[in-house]
Image (cartoon, rainbow, N blue to C red; front, side, top):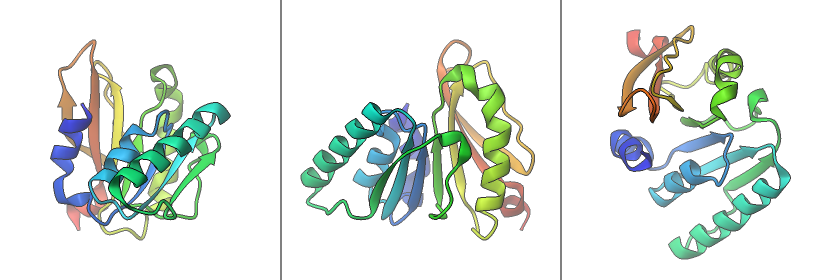
Length: 163
């Protein structure tokens, strides 16, 4: 799935700032780093998992011969969407059982956080049978095999699509 996502994103990743919410192992953000993202923040609530992300960042950056100073791990609730960094790309991979309750809040917060960005993208992993229709956002691409399988929606702001 990640391969398909990053193939679809193409040149959007190089030089981008990203936010990886519900980061888990940090796979989305680390793939972005390996494809040339400039900086990013990984947000993970579980302290042991956040520590694992820090180790993964160190390993990936060492392998790339790149310093990790532009990458941060926040041990926080991803549903709050921390401020500070205004990203170009936002990766969201929440536990599926939380999506219905958290997705509207996330998109509302991202609308405010990304108001000054020309064309930010939100990459949201969800079950294939689920559809999200957040206010002020449009799913411009859906990747995956459908019901019973993980899929990814790539969302753009309506402002970017009409402006």
